[in-house]
Amino acid sequence: MKPKCKLIGEDGNIFNLMGIAYKTLKEADLKENADEMIKRVTSSKSYLEALATISEYVEIY
Image 1 (spheres, rainbow, N blue to C red):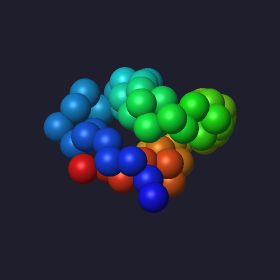
Image 2: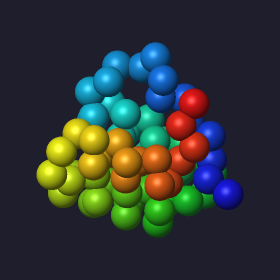
Image 3: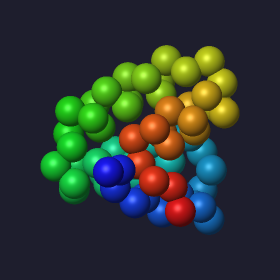
Image 4: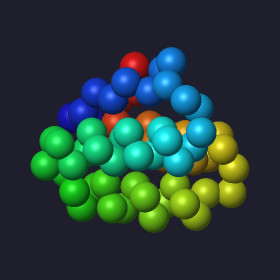
């Protein structure tokens, strides 16, 4: 089960959203997932691809 992560209403800068999701994953003892997500998001070709990747790791609300 993915941890819940409040991203709606936050600053939409992808690095900000990635940081919030990273912190959420680490707090859920999912550091390996967090590190993998960072690598995938930073190699994304677009903002939408990066958001989709984040949503694979956390439940966005």
